[in-house]
Length: 294
Image (cartoon, rainbow, N blue to C red; front, side):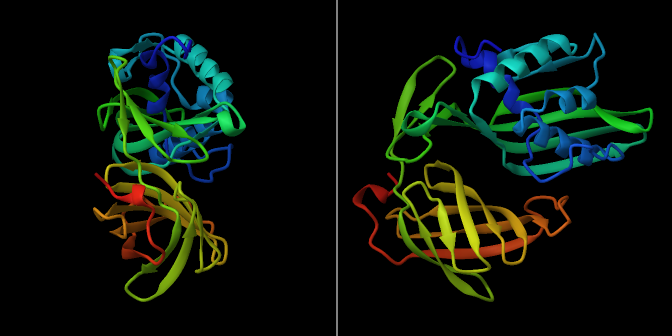
């Protein structure tokens, strides 16, 4: 996809199918949601063969990505997908919201997602985050569903870029190429997390990644924009995982928000944000002076 030349050239790929949940590559094509989730995993795992199988190859199909980039048919899209896969070290694609409607042999969907892209290795690795909203259409053909068309747009004004291993600062790269520096909070320290029926402690690094003392839990931050803090959680003790979104207080000492499931045991088709709860975070260690949100 000639990614180094233009944000517009590579960013379309972000639209693609972005709910990173465990699904077998021999994906179930009997429901449009199952196909979307299989496409997402294939995109995150850079599996072009599965993407090809679950995307229609009609020569006259038209799809659009951000910045107005247009794809007609499968060929050019496949070339850009392969170029993106060769460029990135890895991909993470947490889903924020997904709704699917079905009528007869046609289905359509609306979703919000974060496309997180890692380039480089070690201390030089950079992580970029693009917050997107997506719509698209699927058709049932020969007993299975395939994606036929899609359109994407940005949920904010640009791309957030920061080192993969730390968050001392961040920048937004706009479509015009202007870079704006943002103050990014230092999330390191111990936090007490209070749900309605229990409380536990989390120990995080400055990027907001770490462990917590309930069911062998792990937290991974996927994005921080202003006071909004988003991420995923996983519990090995009871084999569950999901996502969260909280808002940091102005002084960085507390946060309040919601959590939800995306998987419980073998059940991996739980719609995000539909089942979960609310909680309050309180910092137990003094925040670094840079932690306050300005």
